[in-house]
Image (cartoon, rainbow over all chains, first blue to last red; front, side, top):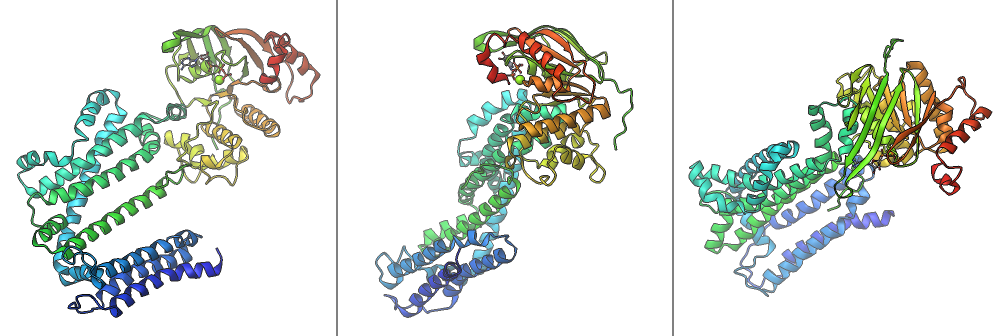
Length: 319
Length: 266
Ligand SMILES: Nc1ncnc2c1ncn2[C@@H]1O[C@H](COP(=O)(O)OP(=O)(O)OP(=O)(O)O)[C@@H](O)[C@H]1O
Ligand SMILES: [Mg+2]
């Protein structure tokens, strides 16, 4: 990549940020009651800052990954342009209903103005999400491994898994609430249940489809069943396992919101729901964006681990 | 590093062994019938024969991956009941573990047997021996077919088995590397007194390395003839005696009469 091209790519997000900020400060709002504060430029600036930090990281310890990362620059630029257009459509020209649609600065203000409350709901959601996800993961991994490894268990377990798995976890919540008696436990269980199914299915499928040649080679080299399971079957099934983990994460996102609507008094799902009821749409957007950020972070971390552990794969699936 | 006692046994006895596959639609396939064969300890025996005559099947039975439909197989008088690291098998298709590096693949046997020591082991030695020094950290998908085949050789050597079963181990190699590997194999064999049973499509290879050549015929697979190769070692590859044996084998395999098939097997 030529130096000029690189420079342009590095500067592009700054340009986007300038457009958003200039628009925010210098084009008058159609309804100019909202006091201009630096929170919005700072919040948008954080995106650019994040980008720059990653560029610096890749430049000095990324082994030539900088060019690859820089290819994201136009995307960030377009994202910032989208903010700009959104602000124009909402605050500046009032082309769509100001009651339902809030410009960027109002969404940011909804967070900064109530940050303790928002933080609290976020932490509650995170706790629920991780507890549910990891319980489901552990349970799914266990059942999947047993069903994948022992044909006799598989014969009895798999049909049950296949029948009850695809049913949305929320259907079970009334029963789960009755059984667990505690709302929080019920929420955790219902998320875990949703994660359990794809993880079980993918783990079992992965283990079943290990090429028998691997077992044969390993056995002639002296491997015993335990070694075969942990050092042959599991590594070979790892791509499937990751697939299950991704599917589980998507499902847990859905069930998280569903679980929080059960009647809890905390969590982003509840926050969004309540804000909708009160007509505070700026908070609704804020809640949605926070959920989005949480999930994109979690998923990208999953991908990172996935890439690290599966670097031996020849044709790794590109997402 | 590994001590070998000179009296290391490893005698394979195959008595009246037959193998019938039950393959659904095609019904029963008689892959082998009435195989009687003794491979004495420290002997190097080759199996040649047309494709589908049951060479791999026989090897897999000795390895313990396949059970005989009738007859019995023994190693040093003990019945072969399943796979064991004493009977190493080099597969026709290398089947390396794709999630392990070259080093990891070669070290696999030691780790499986829980005798792997990170400091003092033969892994590097065998990687060098098959000419892959510098490729330790490569993954199988980064290797050529011949390189993968050599890794699978090193993977079996490192366990130093009593009996080494090899299914076309040099099939994927170029002529020069093949000769090199044949000489390495002979060296290891002489050094250790390993019993080797080797399948090959290359008659010259069989004549060059073996004490005995078993010529098999297909459908059902039977032993057609056992040829003793009484040429002293080290052998010269252009020995005139070679040609005689070679012609013998080809005649037995009926190739003299069907020249159009020649190209396939040679
Ligand atoms: N698992 C199996 N199920 C059914 N039939 C089989 C099976 N394995 C081998 N056979 C049959 O047994 C016969 C011998 O097969 P084998 O693989 O031992 O031949 P081969 O001599 O090694 O051939 P090649 O030289 O092509 O490798 C073939 O007819 C094959 O179709
Ligand atoms: Mg074969």
